[in-house]
Amino acid sequence: MARKKSGRLFLANLAGDSAGFLSKSLKRGRGETVKGRAILAVDPNAIQKLAAGRDIVLVSGTNGKTTTTANLARILADGTDEKVSTSKFGANMDAGIAAALAAKPRNRYVVLECDELYLPTMYELVKPRVIVLLNLSRDQLHRTGEVRKVAKLWHNAFTKDDVTLIIDRDDPFLEYAASNAGHVIRITFGGRRHPDAATCPNCSAILDWSLGDYKCSCGLGSALSQVRSDKRFGGPARNAVLAIEAARLMGAVVPVNLQEELTMNAPDRTMQFKAGNREVKTQLAKNPESWRTALSALTARQVILALNARGIDGKDTSWLWDIDYSSLLGKEVICIGERKLDIAYRLSVQGVNVNTADSFESAAKQFGQEPIEAIASYTAFQDLAANASGLRAGIGAGR
Amino acid sequence: MSLTIVRLYHDLLGTYGDQGNAEILIHRAKSRGINTELIEVTPGMTIPTSGNIYLLGGGEDGPQTASLELMQNDGGLKKAADQGATVFAVCAGFQVIGTSLPGFDGQIIDGLGLVDVTTVVNAAPRSVGELVVEPSRPGLPVLTGFENHQGLTKLGAGVSPLGTVLSGVGNGFDHQEGVWEGNIIGTYMHGPGLARNPELADALIESATGISLSPFEDKWANQFASERRTSLLASKTHK
Image 1 (spheres, rainbow over the protein chains, first blue to last red):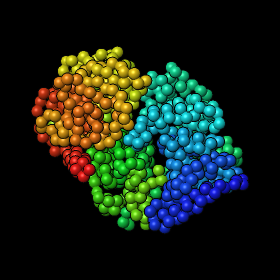
Image 2: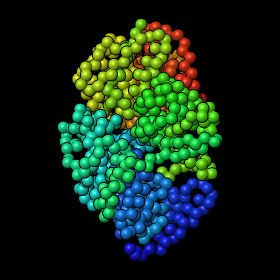
Image 3: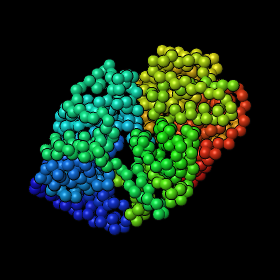
Image 4: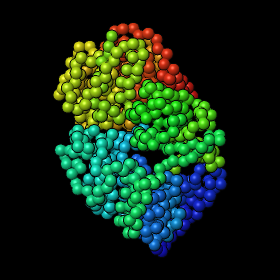
């Protein structure tokens, strides 16, 4: 699709490319955010201009944004004859989105990961055809405020029918967020108790969860679902189902067995990191919900837990007490990271056999030859990934 | 000797991990040979009046109002507090035990009135961050916690705070943080507050049971509390 570039936008893009290259070559990060900032510094309207006339999907929610964005971009590329631009490395605020739009400005399709708080603004700026809302649960309370505040922000933003929302309606916060919207595709997985939704996000009455799904006297949740899916699906599989629906809506031909492939091999954020000469399978976990998922997936008897409390991790570690660690009873656990004592104390109160170490390597050294697995909070995982790729530890994320 | 802990509506008042306070009390009491019982009160249950310590946590505006209505209709907490039970209330729970507070829609509503404090809406941005407090009562070290609240809380004339703010916002008036009046303790400190301040947990058990606790060397509790205290006091000096 040919578009005329404005002079300012052209300069903006050029500035972005140089800054991104410089940043990469200095190994100071992945370049996307720096590149986007340079673009926006030269042309503050670059996002609207780069988005104009393109077919855009936004993906937002607490957990699974980056994976779902990547899945959806791949399904669209495979299932259409069009080229697809997409977010890189989880850069999901204005700068990252500007960089993703600028990368291949002639690609018709764009799949953008969007931070929860930026979503209303990005909806206005990029005029997406589809917005995929994955889930909402507690995350970085010091920054985003409470779950209900995010749900209300979305509820107030989505009041028109110029976009289709695709939501997991089993999450009452999403049902509330979409309840003013003109066009919603609701997907149900048969209902499940939401740990943060004892009361109705709409009217504040106590929700009735007695049948495994929410019911409220105000009527929240009574809208019929368009798609029914498998009750046994976990978070990554549910997100894959939402991505497939979005791709279909955008015109992609989706192979019949793709859902099975994606849900069976849901690529979670798991990497192998080296600790000395040991390979340690490490899961990224960012908030109570993703910690619960990660804990339930542990199979090794020797476990390293890495915890920081920098901005992205959530500065308040109180949520550690909302998680049940009984799956760690009988295992050996070593805590590392800047807030290792927060989690070590919490585990000790639950009777878990716990110790601490100063680094990933020294934790691994304390263990025997049996397999070791790890769970790392956001910045702890980033540091491990940065070390593994030879980059300096402690770089910021895209968000 | 036994200790009955009543945890109130942790589905509603449990956004900030404050339900951990019950586990810490149990852990510390059991280690001193005190039998403990935990009663979980959920919506629809009658609040027992025979508990020794009642715990209320932090929550969002809607659930806060919902829990307040439940407790007002039930009356059990007020009765227990009048009979001398210890109440430890955090954040939204702290606001709820006062005489008035902003409701779900922002209008001022009546609280439970267990203690003479009133909460008003803060026009300034939300108070979010680490809180460091010099306690009012002797025998306690510097207290720390993480605060995250919109309301500001004013103590009535002659009502004692939990302590004086060394850094952070706290109640937002006169550098005061929390309340400690008789058997009623309120605070803005999450962490949970009793994990970050094990000595305060012991003070609650002593207040509730009337017995003097033997010292307890809990390695992880002490390391954690002192690491927080030391690093926050150090960063305060550097400001």
